[in-house]
Structures are given as C-alpha cells and as structure tokens.
Length: 160
Image 1 (cartoon, helix red, strand yellow):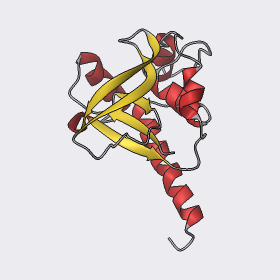
Image 2 (image 1 turned 90 degrees about the vertical axis):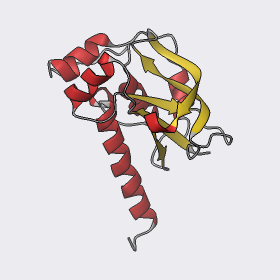
Image 3 (image 1 turned 45 degrees about the vertical axis):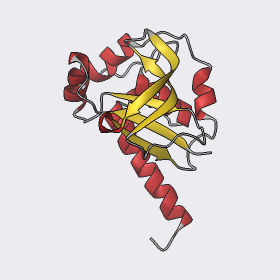
Image 4 (image 1 turned 135 degrees about the vertical axis):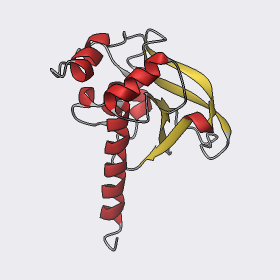
C-alpha cells in the first residue's frame, strides 16, 4: 500500500510564516496520511485520515481532513521507508508537542531532543525510519524524502 506525506504550504496563520522564514522553506507543517486505497492526492480536493504532532492541537493527534490541493504538496514515500510508518506514529497519540525541541533545534541551534514529546517533522521522519529525525524541519524532511526516493529509484533501475 502506498504511503504519503502531506506538506502544508497554504497561507496559514502567523506561526506558519515564522516556521517558513526560520527554516527557509515553503512548508510549515507535515502530516502522515493513512495508507488507504481510496486516497487520491491528484484530486483538487480529497479527504484523508492524518496523523502528526501539532502545536495548535496540543501534541500528537489523528484526525480526518479535507485537503485543498492548492494548500498541500503530497509526496509518495517509496520502498526505503518503514512499511508501517503510520502505525508506528499511532503509538504516540496523546504525547505532548515538543516546543523545547523546536526552540533548541531551529531557534537556538543546540540540537536537543525530548524523547517524550514530538513536533510534526520529527514524528513523521521517525515513523518512516529516518535517523536523527529531531533535526528535520518540514522542508528538510521534504528534501530528504526526495533524495531517498531518487536513490531508491536508481537502485531499482541502474540504467538511470
């Protein structure tokens, strides 16, 4: 079953603008999308079950959303990723949002991790099986996924 991440690039609120400016990225948030055969990221509007950490929602949560394609970039994750990433992340529902991790990784770059709290790109990267996911902003995670997908494709097709 295909696995997707949804990266938020919509106008958003003031905090979305701060995240984009601080991380020099077009993305301010990322969500794991429940692997579901009915999910179609090519539609202008699609509904999906998502899971991530959100400061607005108080931590790790799961919910159903209606994605407007103009606000989101969907990335399929290839075979390098943990096959049960969504289920791995589900085990952390209810964990708090990692405000300290955000501060110490992106505002004051001291690189500290709180193993009991999560921010969006950290949880998504960890669930996919990436090392040091706590160092990734949504934009960093997007770039890492592109690189790993490309490397995986080249390994499958050496003629590229």
